[in-house]
Image (cartoon, rainbow, N blue to C red; front, side, top):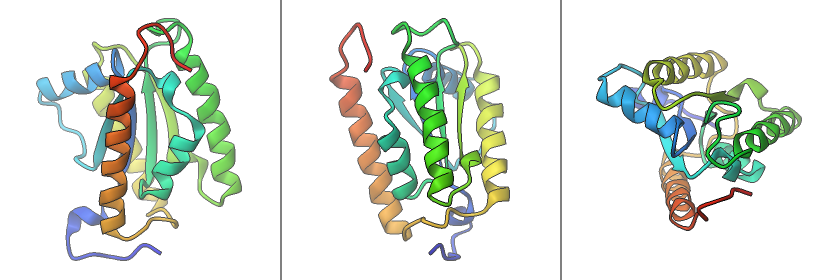
Length: 172
């Protein structure tokens, strides 16, 4: 379904990173503040906690045009919502099984744990994931570029609504 486009940037894989507000998003922000170089084909979605990432969100990311997905949360044992990142890890592992059953490589999805002080590690993670997904090639279920753009915009709006509505003490 994927086609080559005249714009070279459209040939880069689209990587979607679900990042928790307290650690992974802060690490991404730090990477930017440090002016660290990493691929510009990574779209970061800030969530209150990776515990809010449901399997259907991960699968929807692929349906809406992501070639790869990163779920990045707090260090294990250091989740601001106690066990949110542990729930996310279980969901990511289940989603990998579903991706394989759907005919997509499970390597297109990965979970990482990092602290807010690891801007350099964030840049390494997204660079490595971009290289991995480039080797795998475009997602075979990737829609046309306009659908990808609107799909990513919708996911960002949903993530921002989730962040605004997050309860202060828990993640599901």
